[in-house]
Amino acid sequence: MGLKGYLNKTVARGVSRKLAVRKSPGPIVSFTFDDFPRSAMQTAGRMMQERGYSATYYAALGLAGQSSSVGPLFLMDDLYELVSAGHELACHTFHHLSAHQAQPLELQEDCSENRRAALKLMNGYYLENFSFPFGDVTLSAKVALGRIYRSCRTVSHGLNGETIDMSYLLANPIGPDHQQIEALIQENARAGSWLIFYTHDVVEKPSPFGCTPTQFEQVLNCVVRSGAEILPVRNALARFEHQG
Image (cartoon, rainbow, N blue to C red; front, side, top):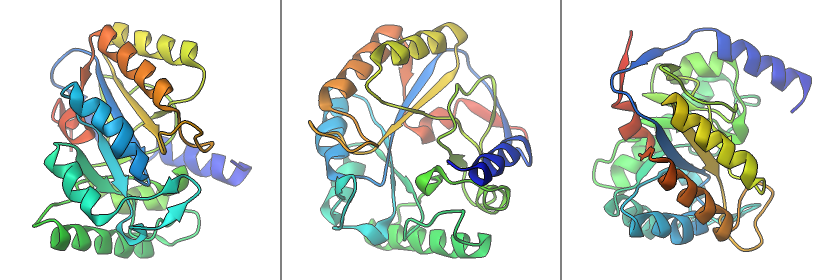
């Protein structure tokens, strides 16, 4: 990330906050997937389903059926399987637009196209949560999309505490350093906070943005042992009260 991107995130993180306060105690962990590679559902999603857990998948529906740097992306049939299995489908714009490249109105219109596509394809399913493609955030994009979505998730690291900014949720990557991830999970359990993980593809030879099935399973097992409640983003947000 360049200096401009860093400054954009720093300003966006501290300004125009949409605050919510925790209503009930206890640690929460959410697993989220950006771009929705097929492997994220076929491997990680089914791994979670077998244990009775659900995740959040941020999809740009305009990319359906395409291949990318994180492998083959979702097919339309995958969307129905995802939702019927109890996972959450959320918004990632329609064309996977960066907030550094698109103006706020363009982002709003592209997101509107994504929501319309979901409503049409999935019998009225509404995309209520959002994550910024590429992790690119600007203050103007945060303000514009924070008005539309219940939450906006970033790739800024950290734990979401007793008071959160719903338009700037913190999230952490699933990577090869399991010791560091385990320490974060334990910290979340002690603090009773909300830890959000994100990744992309889940395959034996992942992209720089993904993880292996073994790495994902290790993290999932560690979270289960920590005693945290495992919830998709929409359900975790129900544990907070908007201070509007």
